[in-house]
Image 1 (spheres, rainbow, N blue to C red):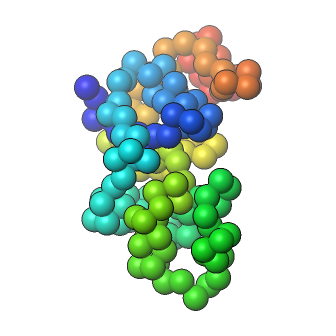
Image 2 (image 1 turned 120 degrees about the vertical axis):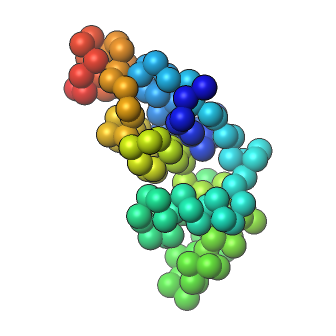
Length: 140
């Protein structure tokens, strides 16, 4: 097993594409299906800190209770937003990838290429057919 971890949702096309790109580099990551095994507070806080992004940037809106919970309201503190993500893991945007080169919310999926330690081994296209890596393993 490599020292790469992906917080993954197999129902998400972006997450599947990122997992494919990791594997295309020759690595087999630790796959954490975060909806089945959500991170605890310390882990989620550490991931957000490692990404160096505001907590709100990690919130997923589409297909979540974001609107019904009123999470767009600026009254919510970072601590409260994290509470919501812990109560409703679907609110955690994905995929989050941790490698020796950094931690990143990999949207769009090709952004994972910036933190993978190994080069791509062959051509790779997203599920929708959009090419990401050419036959020489270079970003398109």
